Amino acid sequence: MWKILLEEFIGDLKTQKLRTALTMFAMTWGTIAVVLLLAFGEGLKVAVERGLINAGERIFMVYGGETGMIHEGLPTGRRIRLTEEDLQLLLRSIPEIEMGSPSYGRWGTSLKWGDTKTNTYMEGIYPEFSEMRRMFPRAGGRFINQQDLEQRRRVLFLGNDIARRIFGAVDPVGQTVMVDGLPFTVVGVMLEKFQDSSNNGPDEDRAIIPASTFKTIYGRRTVSHLLVRPRSIAEAGVVKSQLFRVLGRRHQFDPTDERALPMWDFIEDQKMTHSIGLGIQIFLGLVGAFTLLVAGVGVANIMYVVVKERTREIGIKLAVGARKPHIMAQFMFEAMLIALLGGAGGILFSAAVVRLVNAIPSENPAMVYIANPILSWPIALICVSILVMIGLLAGILPARRAAAVDPVESLRYE
Image 1 (tube, rainbow, N blue to C red):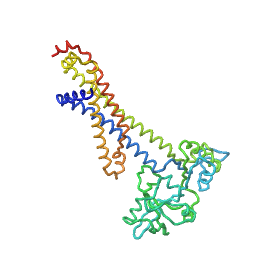
Image 2 (cartoon, rainbow, N blue to C red):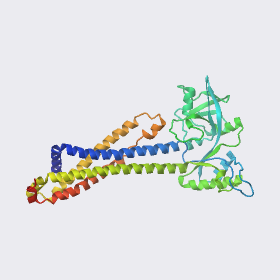
Image 3 (cartoon, helix red, strand yellow):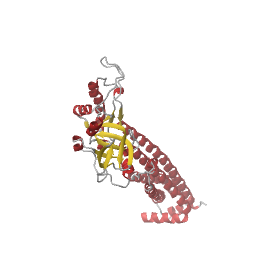
Image 4 (cartoon, helix red, strand yellow):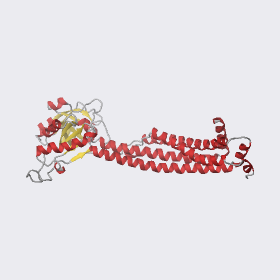
């Protein structure tokens, strides 16, 4: 039976080439609209999330602020200055904290290698900083480790852009750089990453040294900020409230005083970014779905015209013994096959476009959001399934009309 249906479809295709081609094009275009819109939407969502995560993954960046509430007779406006001891207290007191690091920051640090000299932002940190801020070393180098911290070594980790400016094509690892007049050995260079959020500039343009070395050289006691990572996103709320409780007791401020501890909450930012990205995808998916619906209406109209034009043919088939289910199957098969072929063509074209766009160099930061479509094959297969359903629904009514034709009346049809 399927062979007969296919032969009839091919025969109809040969006699009605233009109409069938236009119908298939409508389904192809609808598929392209859905798949490409969702692919670009997914690429945009992933790029925004990656840009945020690459600045800090699942962390709280805690700053010392000013008290905004009277607490136990103490006035408002008192400065809260955080130290490494505060971090150690948090790690001991809050079991939900997975890891932490201080950040001692300094602008205008001078780096000199040979005749090349530049200024940058430098940070003194713990080894855990690498994972929390996603500053991973390129092959052949490493990040600051625990021995560097304990022995106060003069070792330097560089962002990829500042390393390129200083060393050019020379491998920086093992080179000696003068940092504010003191010799430091470069132990690693950051693996290039996309980052659209930052504090004190992008990571690719900064220098990193051990916190102990920073304190020894510059005599700093207070940190620029503390970085804290909860063990899981589910425990983030507990960690956040405990931060205020523990540090509030230590620095004597009200645990509900948010001005005392300004905080960059990367976890909430990531949730918000994910929700926005999901909203964009839903919107684009609806636009594409309406395009598919229009294409489905087009298939239904075409099938009605086909039934009308082939009324005599249908009557002859019924007169010589064809059953109504066979007549219905013929038109439903044609509608579904048109939808399936149009959908397959749309998916193949969309895959080619996605591959072509992804091959375009995206050095321009703006292009990272645009030229980064991600084709989801499950979504593509769902689109094909929906197209088959649309073809089925578009063919049912015309097929029922065809099967209900009176053989005698149809033979009189002109």
